[in-house]
Image (cartoon, rainbow, N blue to C red; front, top):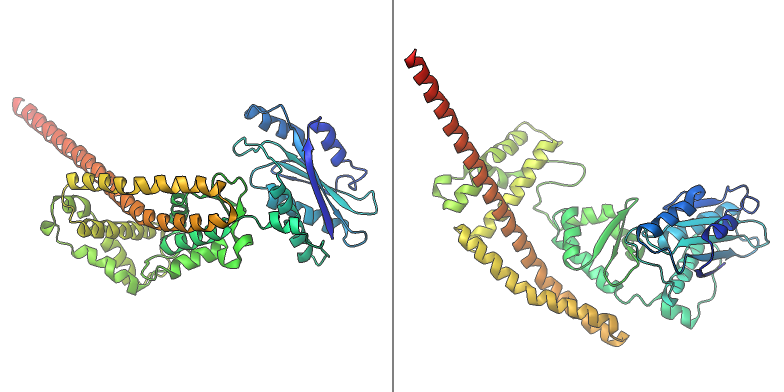
Length: 425
């Protein structure tokens, strides 16, 4: 069993740190650890962050503790639990020094948390919800180590389980997995749903403004939401995908539709199609040759070619779907799509603001509407992305063609001059 508490500290931080890491209480600093900092230089590191964001006044840090029942844990276990607690609560944004004291009958750990985030300069507030979360995570860690836990109180339940947007978050993650073609696309899709995804030590965290605390996806939703499992689920929901994340294995069946690109008759395409796909045959031939040579492990060059073909296939379907044949039509589509999603994004932003102010009963209705709107926005955003990629490719190809033409003209001029010199001799 462990009790916890945390409070603001306005006095000298160096004094508090020296107290926390006192060698006589921590077996000569054996049980002292730093999260996002080094214990020996933690005061300087915390001060530098405050100076960087011009927040040297006011609350200097937060001081907390986790105290264990007498005789229930060893010093090493207590310190390990406390470090995990600090990492989960503050590891994404704040510097923390964790020290476990052995000088009393009850082994206990101290936390010194910088008041200013090294990520964005925002301050830690320590609300009732923050403290309830501290208790909840502490109890869960104690259970994982086979320790007893405190009896839950009504007030504790209220704040510890008040993250009302977690269900919405899970739905958004599932939607991103179903619609993403790779990990970068997964992150981009969540970004379009107004979520911020971060990765730390192989673990994914997610949050959405105005909420300040990151949620570790795997811890919150289970092993099916680890980074590896997310990658596998994306592959399973994309059965026609040509490439996999790891290991890189090329299958002949999936490749057949891409090798057909080498059979494209450029002469039968309109101007825009000719401009975009005249170089695709080279990539298609590269893939076909790799398959015919019984290659199993895809080389980096082949992976690049396959991904380009996958993107070109998407662009070709896009042009065919909307019968786009000129650059003017492409620009008009972009304007039309932007006009379509602009009011939806505005409505979604207003709903999030209303969600923050709404009571618990009304939040569910707002969340359902936000999910509905987000699912309308995402496919249009994807089409806009494809449209803009085509625009960039078109401009790049035009520049390359112009550069090539100038080089040819320059060589012709040099050849003519050289010929004229020879004749004059």
